[in-house]
Image (tube, rainbow, N blue to C red; front, side):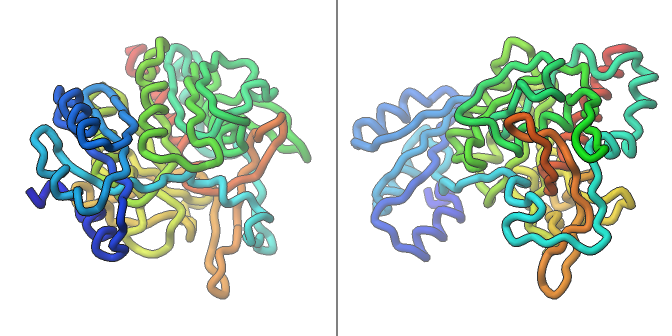
Length: 363
Ligand SMILES: [Zn+2]
């Protein structure tokens, strides 16, 4: 039953030769109870995640037992258990070693939404996304921010509000608000409802935490129509299954392509899969940012990323990424913050998707 152990887990076992290994165990649909009994009998400690039909156990097991667990009836697969991270928080301009090019453009989400041409769609619809519910899985957000106060926001937060999630929420639904230095912020669909799961506390999460956040969104009484996922990590077959389950429930995940460019095959998981829409970052001229991850995607989706939007821009100078465009949006604690990243490009695409859903309903 060797095929029940993923190559990612196999390579960890071979290269590190660990005594114990952290794994994700995916059960066959309807056999979660049976697998749980088996893990209990074996004396393994585990955390169980259930999203719709998908049941996954996060456990630390002895490396010598991986083959036996993988061969157990009712178990689809034993996978490695990687960490996923927010794809933008690491790049606030002026921090983390990033420098800004002379003559760099410092723009804002008002200008970005203007470049997208949102007014034309709003005029057509007669509203700005009313009746559509957007879900977002990110850091906790500052719902009291002056640019977000108008909105109907359902939050599932863990910990303090972060700049990353608050910026993303702003690009989705912020009201036109004066910021600082003559800048303005605005979202693509200010009349839409928002369900915000803040599970990326500190910008990082395991599969189990992300599954919990996806449940916040899919089980919301507000009936989420589209979801914005601005995290990525190494490929995981179990994460791929989660995207399949989201699609099975009729919801489309928009995902950030990743900030690992400009090398090829750098689109992160889950964006590199067919079930997601992978969003790359370009400047207002349509030039792809150096940081933006490049295709191809995973074997099920070679043609990636799928679409691009405004998430700031960098070029490589002397081997370093230099910022040539950054975008101001709402930050935590009522502040405004300039960020770049494919996490920033994604909510513009999700917002447009929300307007499109509103338009289809109106026909
Ligand atoms: Zn993957």
